Image (cartoon, rainbow, N blue to C red; front, side):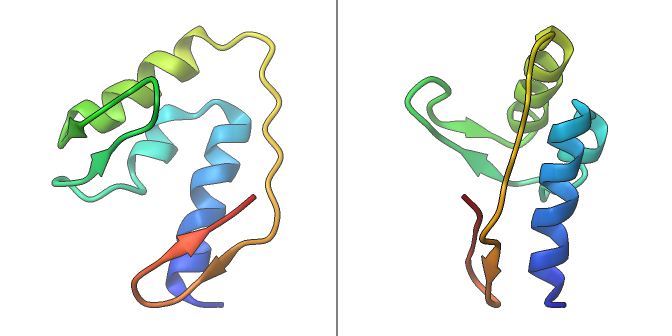
Length: 77
């Protein structure tokens, strides 16, 4: 298994458990994140977002599949 594939599995499995610590561990210290709700997060803001979301989630189900990675990119659906 490619190391980036293992990283995506670790992230989404953490997400399934609402384990923000496990999710945050998948990011580099200088990571960036942006989506329609959380735009332009940098560094420590990225894991803070997961701590907030995982801490508030009560009725969350996460499913993922189709993990594809290479040395520079990764995706899951």
